[in-house]
Image (spheres, rainbow, N blue to C red):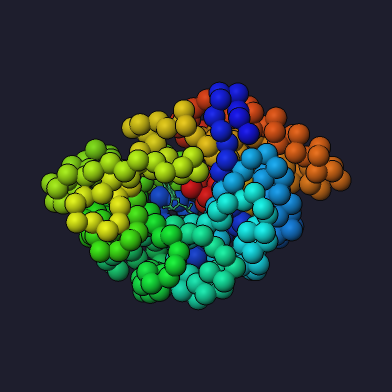
Length: 322
Ligand code: SAM
Ligand code: SF4
């Protein structure tokens, strides 16, 4: 559907849990998330019902995220059901990779189209310091397992001053011989990131670091309207691509195509504002699908024009799924 500013909204990020098996310093406090009862989280049946309504409103791509989505039981069967919705063209997953090796076959068999694997470093020590968990080898093995599979693979790295500066070239090199996209995402000042004192490395700095090392980065044209805000480039002799998501330096709100559903069933229409709709309440108050669809349509129509990060949003990144 088209919102009040003429943007086509066709992409939904659905968080299936806010729990996680890592504690990345820019995302989640050491103590983890506030425990809430199972009943407060949307059931997978409810997620599917909302996804079907989304699809009637023009959503064509769904990304499952979290928290760590692979902690949610029966995720492959949810993926299979989502793939059965005829107008959904892509179902993808964003994961930290800790459990990915274990579930890879099941996810592929369910029809998963692509994986975004978050990997900020190839050094075990930096990984352990940053995530506060000793699980680096699980993630590395997951990455290696996925490489040979028929699945679109992207690596997400958040560059942080004084933390993983020395990892940028190593991570980018993964796209040299592998048909994958390695993306550098600017740190967004939300929740823990706002309080942690960590500072992101500006995209322009990363860009010149890569050009100095690999030669000119040649821009790649956007292939379709489902593609997110990343801008892609390819150095000569690279099989894969390098992507940049610089939400702060270059606002891409004018072409934003996404909405987010939290694990607790709140529809968030912009990352930086708390505006949206309590979908869970509607689902559980006996409203029929047509009524819920109309409410969701109104909420999406009113999607804010552009983001404004001032630390005021009550949502944490692990609740909205990145
Ligand atoms: N646990 C999964 C993972 O890490 O891939 C999915 C959820 S996580 C919130 C999704 C993405 O958000 C990750 O790539 C993570 O690096 C990114 N992220 C978390 N906090 C961020 C922040 N403050 N700024 C930018 N990206 C952030
Ligand atoms: Fe967990 Fe992902 Fe947040 Fe790291 S970024 S703490 S893996 S939800």
